[in-house]
Length: 631
Image (cartoon, rainbow, N blue to C red):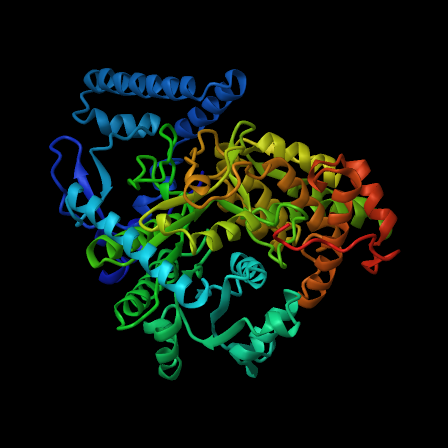
């Protein structure tokens, strides 16, 4: 059974990080607020289940019901019936044995708990009529400021970007370089300290200018015109004024039209304090910075664009997660990343309604490589991680050299690694990074995006079953789907124990990490995110990316370009991705369809014909010039 830390082993966060700043506990019986502190872990899914064998088995059986019937509502109804039966049985038994507390007996025998409270977000905002008036006022102000910028400079925008070295931030820079209405992008970037791996001594410090130059080279933006559009300034989002030196601030206050706050911690397994510091404190610093720009006399500032996540809605297992509202999920949050991003969204809303900051919130789903070729600028996190594990397992199974015993052990380890915790029916919302960046840049020019929360998500989600099938086709390996509840409580502990005894601690750790990350996102009953404002407000295409095709390209990219995460040098990845992009455009021209729509063998044949995969160089010159990102 999975064990959660006891209350005394988890120290409470400092008061400024306390969840009670944003969330209150409410009695189900009286509706009154329960004046009681609570630990952050109480707001997570796993704090409320998996304590009892019967609970684990019941969830496993409900997964079988969903698989057999395809009806999640039936599974929920059956689960409620089983709980009622368990409580009735406990009451009868308690009378028979003289136990005064049937709830205690129900918890001991069946793992049943009577929740006597619920959580909700605090609201200190305006009345509904005042909110409507404030929103209309902010939209009008943004429209006026944008129109003034158009009259003064022909709509030449000057944008400050945080998180420019991250996955999404890099794509924003790439698209901004090709947007004629963006005159300048100022990227806040920290100096990078290089340490000796053995002694931990500092050997070199890379300045923001040097890091910026390297970044532009990785993004193929080295020609004079493109490079002139970007400026890199020292800073840190966890510091006041974003840590920007005073000498740079005066010019920014007089020139910036927008702030895009893209920096965040995307580690799903970070502890609460670390997630809070990155996601909440970082957001607060960015909001204060933008409010200072907006209130500066003569400032051309138009709006603040906050990048959140559609998973701020947590585990909604029945209701659609709406764009217009955020409520505390009755089924809690999967991790502290989701929780602290929700808190950051509430702070953004507060700055808008209480302080009058012109702000738009964009909420991407799970971001993967760009839709045409899967290019991900070297990212190996989230969905890339299990694909790379499966790919390396296939490589281990294919080895023919060495001793028979070593090959057999490697094969056994590889097969143990090919387990993915996922209910076949679970729907995962994947969105390519180019769609996300397009939405971010579109919001700069759309005054109606002010005061809106927009889901940058898909209306065609991918199931765990489709992931399994695609991996089998693309990587030629059979991945077993494991029921998530049984996997995290029974299978995974056994696998990691065996792997550790075989001296495979790194593999065991990787599997534990994958289980912790995906266990919550691949169960049945995943949230359905409302979409619509991406088209209606931002003006993006109504034809959203095909999730299966995008995932197929992720597999192909990770296999050919990154060798399943084993090509790590940023410049080498950049060189490869440029060649890969050219080949993908050629495929589109030759076949009249996207590369992701092409069957496996046909795609493989074309790539092998034009690419020497060992040296990753073309066998022949490109047939045509790849079109620009806007085409």
